[in-house]
Amino acid sequence: MARFYAKTVTWNNAVLTNICDEELLGATLRDGGLSLTLSPEYFGEVLVDEKGAMRLLERGDILDLVGERIVGLALKAGLAHPGAVRSVQRVPMLMIYKFGKGAVQ
Image 1: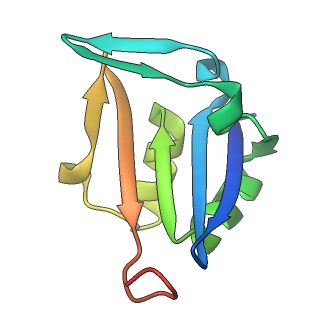
Image 2 (image 1 turned 45 degrees about the vertical axis):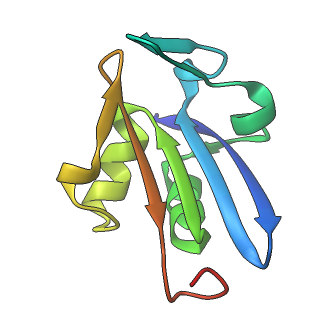
C-alpha cells in the first residue's frame, strides 16, 4: 500500500500542503549545486494512504510534492501537466499553485 508523509499549513488564507513519498522523508537529494532536504519538519506531520493524499491534493491551494508516487497521483488527477515536473537526483518534484481557487490569486 502506498503511503505518504504530509504537512498542511494555513498561510495568508491559503492552504499550503507538502507531500512526499513515505521512503523519502529525511532524505537529501542533490543535483549539481542544488540540494533538497525532505525534513520531517516540512513534510512529516502525518502519514497518509493514497485516499488521504488525494483529499489533501484536492484541498490544498499550494502543493509541494516530491516523489514518483505522489507526483503521479497529481498528474493522474489532472492537477498539472507532465511538462511541469522537475527532477532532483532523478526524483520527480512538482509545485502547483491553484490560482483563483480561493485566497491565492
